[in-house]
Structure formats: structure tokens, C-alpha cells
Length: 371
Ligand SMILES: *Cc1c(COP(=O)(O)O)cnc(C)c1O
Image (cartoon, rainbow, N blue to C red; front, side, top):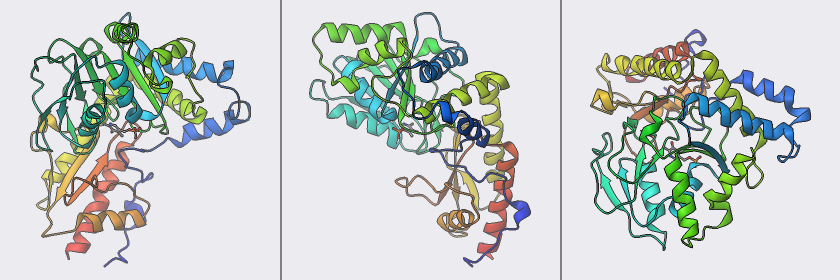
């Protein structure tokens, strides 16, 4: 059965449904190629690249309607590096972590290794749901995850109690609504909803977060320079990064921020992603051999849709393998979740018609494999 062919007419125009790295719009890549001769390979301390950083910073400020006093900060190393940045520059003594998937667990584990901090408090929930953001005594920072990319569970961003609210928004930022008054750091990498490449972290910081950075520094907390948020803040204010960034990543990020704004900003993006996700969840519910992994509809991610398949009917890995042979890629389940599952991203760059084509393709493959 592995020589199964999907009719070309059923296939999506673009077969990239990965949850990160995710689809990069070809128009943006073409604009990059056009700009390349005077941009790629030029100094990040000179106007051409600084202008890109400026476009990213002002574009994100508008996209998220950031209140007065909030800063847009950039650095190298992606969201994973930002966990270490937070451990050095945002957590004062002890943090609380709502853990409900691989990424939220990784931040807690990173803080666990920080010798200058008390052991973090973890509040865990089974994968497929999320913990209630209840207050925790004796902490000065809360770690939330807006969208757990490993499980497809979305969690509201609200302040659990006094302390800084640090939100891993890596797969949510640019695709889910958020109220900036509810967070102190909303951080992400650009290779998910922002349809760019990896390697960079971006953080939206409140005035309270900026004050914490200064207070820890004044109190003698020493961060390695590449993880020093104070240094990143100083450089970002000059539309630079502390060390050399990927200029292509910045270009694609700026292009996507402006593309989202042209379409109606975060409201448009959120509605578009929700509609595509609703198509997938509704499709799964209408199949006897498929079901959304997340049972509570209110917790189902609008951007990372996890769909369980009935193992007695079909092997999800085989479905994904047939689709991959046809150029429809990265819908395999998160490797450590270990379920008979497909995981499909519906980020803003993914066309609604392609999501519909994808479900038609899965129907075709399952019918053929299940005989
Ligand atoms: C992808 C992802 C990360 C890791 O991002 P990197 O750029 O690889 O560091 C962290 N958190 C969440 C929620 C993610 O989706």
C-alpha cells in the first residue's frame, strides 16, 4: 500500500503544515532575493539592517497595541535562549511554572539548573489540558505558555497573582489575541506564526520587566553578556542586536509583520487561524476514525491542531509518510507525545484552501490504507 498515489487535483498548492519551522511565504522570499544584493552580507551596524530592526520593532508595537512603557527587544538564540535570559535577568528568586507539555517543561528545567535561584514551583496538568493559573505563594515570576506546541493546547494569558508574568508565546504570537496589560514578557521565535526563520528571540517587555532587569543588575546579579537582557535592551533601543543576527530572518520577520498589518492585524490573524482550525476539528469530529486530541473545545489551539487517529483503523505515521511522499510535510505528531496522531499548523501564512485540500488528502489516504 505504500505506493499509494494521491490524485494531483486533491493536493494543496503549498504542502507545508509544520508547527515550526513553518511555512515561509514565497513572495517574502522573492522580495528578500531582490533586496539581497544591497542587504545580505552588509553590516548590522549600518542603516540598511538597522532599518529592518526598526520596522520589526515599530511593527510589533502596533500589532500588539503595546501600552506606553513597553519595549520590543531582540536577541540571538531563539525562545530556548530566552529561557536562560529570563533565569538570569527576570526571575528574582523563585518562579512558578504551569507545565502542560514539552516546552513549558523545558523552561522549568532550565530554571532548575540556575544555581542563583531557588528551585522553581511547577504546577502540572496532564498533556491535552492545562493547569488553572492559580496564584502560588512565595514566587516573583510566573511562567505561562500561550500555546503548547507539543500538545495543541492553548491557555489564556491572565495574571495569576503578584509577580512578573513571563509568557512563552513562541507559536501563539501573531496568531492569537492577547492583552498586553496581562503580561510582563511575551517572547517568541520568528519561525512559527511570523513565517520567518529561526535563530532569533523577540520579547515584548513591560515597564515592570524592564525595572526588574535594572534592579537585579543593581543588586549584583551577573548575567553572561549574551544572555544579559540589559545589554539586549540597550542594543534594541538603537535598532541593533548585541551580536550579529541573521539578516534574512529579520527581513522575513519584518515582511510578515507588515503583511499581517495590511490584512487587519492581530484581529484578522486570530480569526483566520481560528477558522482554519475549526475546519480541522470539525472534520475530525465528523470522521469515525478521527477525533481532536484536546477534549475541551475551549482549550483547542487555533494554530496547532492535534488530531488523534484510531489505531485500529490506520497508522498515523503511515498517513504522514504517504503525504510526505507527495510534498505534504511535517504533520507527524510531536515525537515525545507518542500518540497515533497528526499535528497540523494553521498559522496565518497557511491558506484556508490548503487546509481543506489537506483534509481531503487525508480522507483519500485513510480510505485507501484502511481498505
Ligand atoms: C518552538 C518553540 C520553542 C523553541 O523555540 P526555538 O526557536 O527552537 O528556541 C519554545 N516554546 C514553544 C512554545 C515553541 O513552540
